Image (cartoon, rainbow, N blue to C red; front, side, top):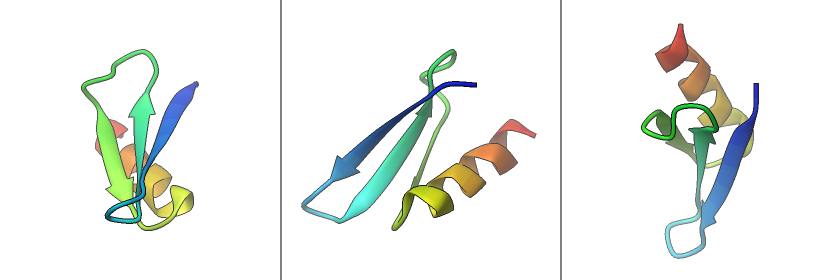
Length: 43
């Protein structure tokens, strides 16, 4: 799987997007937190 990660510097939040389905995304204070949320959404 491939992901795109962005950082909102104003709010200090990482957003992880699924490369194949950009409508699926999750935010977190760390990349790991955002990835865990994204994986739960995908399951």
